[in-house]
Image 1: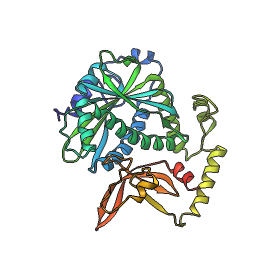
Image 2 (image 1 turned 180 degrees about the vertical axis):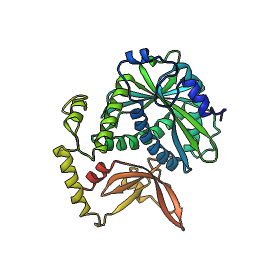
Image 3 (image 1 turned 90 degrees about the horizontal axis):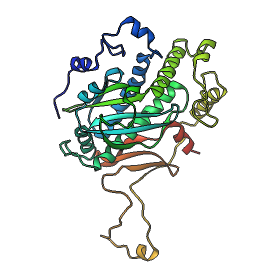
Image 4 (image 1 turned 135 degrees about the vertical axis):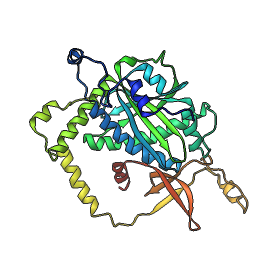
Length: 347
C-alpha cells in the first residue's frame, strides 16, 4: 500500500478548521451570503451510519476486522480529493431509487480496488489491478450499500433503496459531472493486520441537501422522544420522486400498522422452519440421471468460491460461504435480504 496521509495532512488538504465543512479563511461576510446553508454535521451523521454498516459487512466478507471512519466532510475541493486518493482512479456510481434523489459517487484508487478485490477472492491483497476487479468492487459496495440503505431507511422512517452500481475509469480533469456542485466525505477503511484504503464520496448538492434535511429531521424527532410537532412537519420534504411515494412520519397509519404486524410476528418466533443450503442447480435428462454412477461428476451452475444460498420455505433469505465447525459443515452468512423481505418470504 502507498504512503498513508495523516489526519493533519487530510485536514490541511481540505482547507478546513474542523470536520464540519467550515472552510478556513472565509470571512463572516462571505459566509453570510452563502446559500443555502448546509448542515455538514447532519451529512456526517449519515455517513457515520455508513461506517457502522461498512465495518460489519466488509469484516464479514474479508473475514478480518475492518474499521471505517470519517476523515473529512465538507465542500468538495478537487485538488484535495485528488491528493487524498492517489490516482489512477475508479468511480462507482450509486443511484438512489427511493428515499433520496440523485446519484452518489465514490472515488477509489485503482490500487485500493485491486487490494480489496484480491482479498475478496481469497488472495493476499497483492494482485495488480485488472478489469475483473471492477466487478468485485461493485459486488462489495453493493453488499455494503444494501446494509447502509436499510439502516438509513430506519432513521428516515421510509424505504431507502439504490439501483445497480456501475464502475468506470475516472479522471478528475474530466469527471463527467460538476465537481464544484458536490460535497465530499472522506472515509478511511483500516484492515486488521495492515492495509488502509481511502474512499472519497461525492454527493451532488441536491442529494447532499436532501440527506442533510432528512437526517436533521430524524434527529429532531429522536430528541423529541419520537413525537413530531407541526414545525418539524412543515420543514420535512414530502412528495420526493415519482408515483405515489411519500414520506411517512412516526405518526402515520402505515407506521402504526407496521408496529402491529411486528407484534403479530413475535407470536410466531418459536415456530420451526425447514432451512436448506443450496450449493447449486443443474438440469439433467432422465437418460443422464440413469447413467449416474459412483465417481460421476455433476456440474452445477455456480463458480467455485461463489456464495451458497440459504433458503427458508424455498425462498432465498441469505448467502454464505461454506465452513467446517467441529467436523460438521456449516455456512458463514455474508449477506442477508432485508428483514421485511425475509418476513414476506415466510408466507
